[in-house]
Length: 213
Image (cartoon, rainbow, N blue to C red; front, side, top):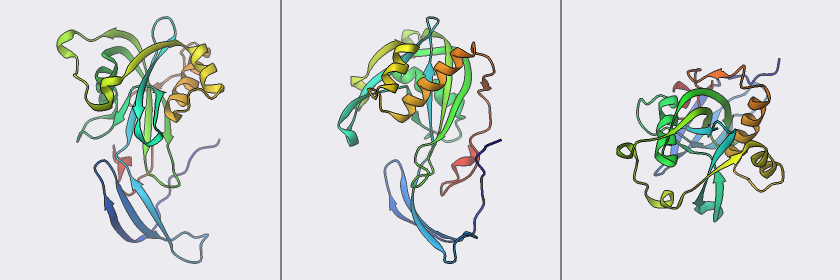
């Protein structure tokens, strides 16, 4: 069976070379048995994030469009956000993000996919949850959006149409792509064999120790 293997390596030096608003850049020197000399790498230390594949009773997945400055694009995504609330369980964060970005809540939650977004340069881990049994939040529970999120466009897209958009390169957000692919596959299995929403956070720890979530 193929499975990622967490490894503890001896780190001899560590310093934060840049402290940012959301994430830091950490420089570490470490040893590996396959290398004769110590290795030094700069890593983006990331708090981790959650995302939500929200699928309604008509098997439509909720996609949101918003502006992303680094790519100068209004790309299509799924609701997502950082694990930036101290002590908040990732599943709770996912529920919060679905409410904040889509004004929705859901009855049924499962873990859909886990991913390392850029393991050569970042310790970021993202969990994508599957949310079903959707309903709109009451007016008093709605969140006022700020910044780029004020321009969010919501669209419920049939899973087959969303898959076609991914396969033809029209949706390029990696987390959205994975959410669509996994949701489409889960539907093909009749929504059976799904993983618990309370599964342990993806294994392994990076510079920030995010594996402890």
